[in-house]
Image (tube, rainbow, N blue to C red; front, side, top):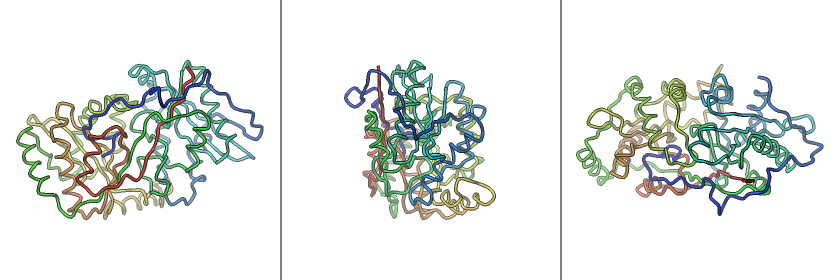
Length: 408
C-alpha cells in the first residue's frame, strides 16, 4: 500500500522543514561558470517534446527504467491540460552540451502548499542529467535563482504539481525494476545533489510483497469481526461501471486521509474530474476494493493494477500504433500487482478497516494467480502502513528521498 497512497496509516507531517536534516545557505546558488553548458528555457511545443523525450535517450535499454506515457507527460506539463496550474506556477529548462541535450529540470511553485504548510518552498521535479557536475550545477542554479526571485526561501524535491505525480529520488534499489508510479534514476544522482548542499527532508520506502497461498484463517476471522463491529462491507463490483459512481467519493476520502502526509495538498474538484476521466475506465474490479459503511458511503478503498512495467518498456512511451497491445497483454494474465492508491476515512482508521480491504484484495490476488505485489512509496515514518507487511513475506527493496535546500 503506498503512502502517497496509504490505507489509513497514521502519519506525521514528516520532514517539511526539519532543522536537523535540511541544510541552508545565505542565498540561493547561481549557475557556476560553465562555458560548455548552455541552458534553454522550454518555450515551444518542440522544446517541451525534447524535455519529455530526454530520459528516453538517457535510459535507453536500461533494464530497470520504466518510461512514462508521453501523452500523460504532455497532459501534466501543459498549462491548458493540467488543472493544477490554477494554483501552480512552473518553468522548465533544458541543458545542452556539445550541441546535444544533457539535462532537464522543472521548477514549480504550489501556492496551496505554501498556504497550508507555511513554508515558502519551491519544488524541483522532472530532474534528469548526465554525470557531469557542471550540467547539474547549471540546472539547479537556474531553478534556485528563479525560486529566489519569486520570494521563495528554499526548494525541495523531486516533487510534482500534486501528490499524484511521481516523487522522490531513488537512493537505494538501483537494481530493482521501477514501476509506472515511481521515478527511476541513475545511482550518481544523489551525490550530485548532496554536493550542491541538498539534504534529506523525507524518505519513502517500498516493499515487494509475496502473495500467500491462502488467506490466513486469522485474517478471515478479523474480517468478520470488523464488518460486524463497524457495519462496513466490501462493494461486490463485477465491472468498472459498478465502480465508477464511487470514483469522486474515493478522492474525497483520499483528501481527508492524506491531509497530514508530507507536502500533501488536497485535490480540487477539477483535478479529481481529470483523474477520474483519465484513469477510471482502466481499473479492474478484481483489484479495486471499495469499503462502504452502513449508509452506503465510501469508508475506504484500495486501487491496484497489474504491473505495466515491462509493457511500458516495450511500448516506449507510446500507446499507438501498437503500444496499447503490450498494455492489454500485461493486464490479461498478470503475475505482479502495483498497489497505487489506498485510504481509509479518518473516523475509521486504526479500527481494522484497512486490514479488511487488504484481506479482500489478497483473496482476489490468490484467485488470479498473482505472485507478488509492489507497495510503491510509503513514508519512512508511517509505521502503521508498514505494519501491514508483517503478516506477509515481504522485503524492503527500494528507498527514495525528497531533498531540501534552504537559503533563508
